[in-house]
Image (cartoon, rainbow, N blue to C red):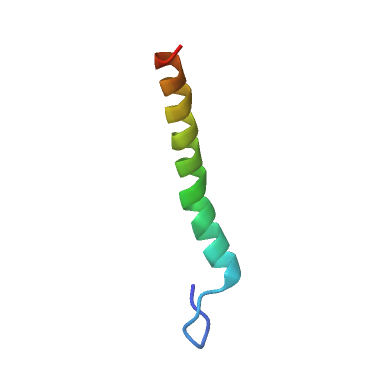
Length: 40
């Protein structure tokens, strides 16, 4: 989604970061939760 001058809109950049960040945050939190069980 580029504008006429070839730049991406801030909304599309934010949506792309959310599409990457949400699964990444979920994966990191699950890794921390599972590793806490190992050190109990």
